[in-house]
Every structure is written in C-alpha cells, then in structure tokens.
Length: 239
Ligand SMILES: Cc1cc2nc3c(=O)[nH]c(=O)nc-3n(C[C@H](O)[C@H](O)[C@H](O)COP(=O)(O)O)c2cc1C
View 1 (cartoon, rainbow, N blue to C red):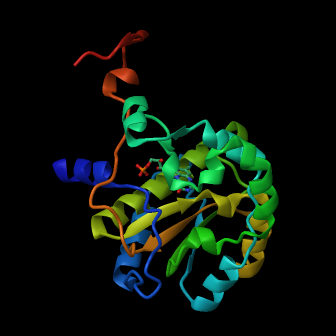
View 2 (spheres, protein in one colour):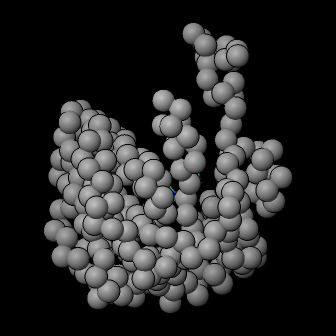
C-alpha cells in the first residue's frame, strides 16, 4: 500500500529536455500501454486510441508544427504563477513562474510574445523527447447522458494518470502537453499522423529520460483540511 502512495507522491511533471538517444524500451512502453488499457472509463466505453510516435521523421514533422500562444493563455497562466518557491509553498496551489521565460511573467510583454509566437514551433515543447504518446478519442461518441461529455474527459484523465504512475514506477520521465489538443495544432498533428477527422486529440505525452534534473522536486499541495469536508460542506476535516 505504501508503495502506491509513494508512486503517487513522487509522480511529477518532467519539463526538462530529454535525451533524444535514450528511448524507453519496448517492454516499458508495453507496460505503460497496459496501464492505460486497465484505466476506468465511464460505462467502460474505453473511448481512446493512443498513437505512439518514435520515428525520427514523424518526430521532426511534429516538431515543425507551429504553436501560437495567445494573450488569453498568457493572462490566465500568469494568474496561476508563484514567483518564488517560498510563495508556492505558502500558496500551495498553482505553478512556479520561473519555469517560463521572463517575458511570460511580464504583462507588458504579452502582446509582443503572442505576436512573435507565430513562428514558434512544437519542438520547443517536445524538447528532444524520443517518444510521444498522442491520446485521442472519438468525438462522435459520449458517455450516456453526460453533458459536454464530462464523464468522457474524466475517463481520459484516468488513462493519463494510469500511464503516468506506471512511467513513474519504471523511472521514465513524463510530461503532459495540452497544446497538442489546441485547435490549430491539433489540425496539423492529425494531418501528420493521418488521424481520422472524427477523432480529437485530448493531450500528448512526452516520454523519456531528462538530460539533467534536480534531485528533488517541489511538491506543493493543499493540506487535507483545506479540501476535505466532513458530513456537511461547512465542516472542515479534523485530523
Ligand atoms: C489535464 C492536464 C493538463 C496538463 N497540461 C500540461 C501542459 O500542457 N504542460 C505541462 O507542462 N504540464 C501540464 N500538466 C501538468 C500540471 O501542470 C501538473 O500536474 C501540476 O502543475 C502539478 O505538478 P506535478 O505534475 O509535478 O505534480 C497538465 C496536467 C493535467 C492534469
């Protein structure tokens, strides 16, 4: 039991460049896919298809796809930032701003960043990863009576989490890349990988081994009593 909790607590987003020459083994990849296979999904619909991309040609083609950053993204991203580790530890939610370029943290620069991002490409996100998983779903179907297919999206999250924990257990670095599901990017990714029109991209994953990384990651989370309620919403949890 404690091993599961340890994997959950140590799982983290690996945002550092990966070694392009160090690909996860086929055996490890199969275990990650097996973890996806057993994910819970609404009505057991298993409404997902995963495209594994590891050949250089396709990785290069994906890397060349343009990914534009909007001012809206920069503004909403900024709202989630802490500017020092101490601030994040105190706030307990959000992410560390220092992982982004200075210009993303400077509201006066946003217009320029958004304009110049016209020419930025996905390889800045893929960062040398030798293997990507593109997680797609059939948008023509939805979980029964699930408004906006919320239950379907939760299911895709379960797939994500199962794969992430397995990767963590195998010592493989893992990062979600939501940008693959953004309208303009999604269109080009689908074309490159010949993904049928009716499929949508939920997210993509970078899999690999970071070239360098800190020995310890900052794990900022709320305490139990800040989100758990006891019997009635107004009763905070007691330990
Ligand atoms: C639905 C979803 C989308 C995410 N999209 C991204 C993303 O595009 N890029 C990224 O670096 N991290 C992404 N993340 C990772 C979160 O930022 C991360 O899980 C959170 O900051 C907590 O950090 P940790 O994963 O290191 O515990 C995403 C996570 C989820 C669940």
